[in-house]
Image (cartoon, rainbow, N blue to C red; front, side):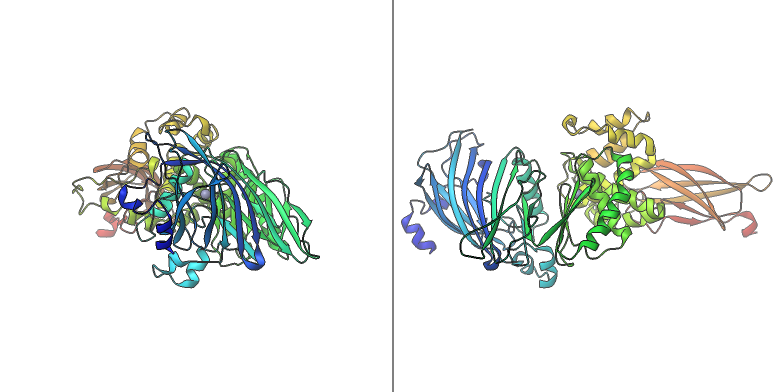
Amino acid sequence: MKKLLCVLSVLCGFHSARALDRQAFTFTDYDLKIKVTPATQSFEAEGKVTLRNDTPQPQRNPVLQISSTLAWNSIAIAGKPVQYLAETYTSDIDHTGALSEAIITLPQPVLPQGTVEIELSYGGKIPQDATRLTRIDIPAERAARSDWDQIGEAFTGMRGIGYVAWYPIATEAVSLSDGNQVFETAEAWKRRQAQTKFSAHVCAGEYATAPPAQGLIANVAWGGPVGVSHIGPPGAYTMCTTFAWRPLGLTVPIFAIGDYRSLNQAAMAIRYVAGHESYARRWATAGEKIAPFIAQWFGPRKQPVQIVELPNKDMAPFEAGSVLFTPLVSGQENDIQVVLAHQFAHATLQSPRLWIDEGLAHFAQALEREQQEGRAAALAYMDERLPPLQEAEKEFLPAAPGKVVDPPPQGQSLIEAGDEVFFRTKAMFVWWMLRDMVGDDALERAIRAYRPEQDRDASYFQRLLAAQFHRDLEWFFDDWVYRDRGLPEFHITEVYPRKLIPEDWSVTVAVENSGEAGAEVPIAVRAAQGEERKRLEVRAHEKASVRIPIPVLPKQAVVNDGSVPAFEMDNNSAEISTPEVSQ
Ligand SMILES: [Zn+2]
């Protein structure tokens, strides 16, 4: 097939002739008509895409990629078919691990900043497929939980870039076995297409009985109303709606089709599978309970949180902005509240910076955990997420106290991090540390003053905070946000207990930080009952000490309660030998 196409095409030898630039064009406008037939898993699309040449050279060869289970039917410009070479292109950007790629030869080159409108038609089937995961030895069952996209009679779920190429894209090949490539490529695509207009008229059919009007949904607040109509042979129904994003922003278009019902409240809109109303009510109750707390921290909500149920309890939840696709069946009330805290934060505050956007949403979850069962529970929640961060930062780990890592590693600063462990986990810790340093009031006021449209340079948030809290935080932002300096590594070097008159003690605790990142860390002196705490700033490769009075016999000194992410979390205590005990 490939050979035959090549014979027919002027593109023979194309690849060797000159390098193909898959990123020459930005997709500025999608206008698609889509027909999905759940009973046969079939997908048909036709419509137009507009491409803009964003290179300084004229370009003749735009590339269009769709999922490998789909095939190109026709590609035309102004009604005239254009020549193209259709090939399978291996890439893990799609769940099948491959794309159907069309390399087009335009009759005339597109000049720099010029555009071309391409008419296209493609189709095929979209069954559930996790080839890209199973071929790197992820067990089939686990792989299917993550790659759940499919067209199916019971459920259709279609996530765009990074899952199923159901609308045309153009990307360089990526592999899941190559670090974070797939995720980063999807993120780069989103950023590049943020101004893109995207409209899809989606119809689903043919049903023997009338489907519910809520049965076809997308992650867009202004998707048109779903119309259900009777078409074709007796007993065949179809439902249609138009989803439009103008512009897309950082959203990835997603749609789902199923036997959905809706539960709408002021704070939340829930689409649940018929028969699951009691579960939906449990989520709605949890949402109502946390809404005031999130508003106190992040300000008034800008849009309702949208929840779309995934019908199988093993399907991995997926978030797209304030929309969450998740099973509703399992989960304790506390867990549901912690999950929802994340989406409520997104529905309230959006940022073009991932460490703010996602970092704050994760921080909201830790705050909610603290509301439920106190600080220790919140720290335990964060600590569960720490090991991958320690692993990601380990190149900064000094061989021994007093040693420096030479040459200094490059790392990934939070402001440009594309790796989730940074912009989610590390950012969550950074927000928590800031809160411990400046206090709830100052941080809440700075967060509520945040305006995404004014966030034009990396130090914007630091300035908002400086207006509320008048102490130098430059060193902290330098070590944790503007640069990657790994994690601190604390140990207690000396403990001096001193007896005061009559009963009281004073304990001086000296701490060394052998890491490359400084932090303000809690120090505790513990007795048989109770403890006293102070906070101590220990910059990178420095020692600092603090004197802590305690009214009873001190037993143990502890640095770091878990609120500062460090390399080692279980070497942080020293026993105190007091004169009474040792004599
Ligand atoms: Zn999120």
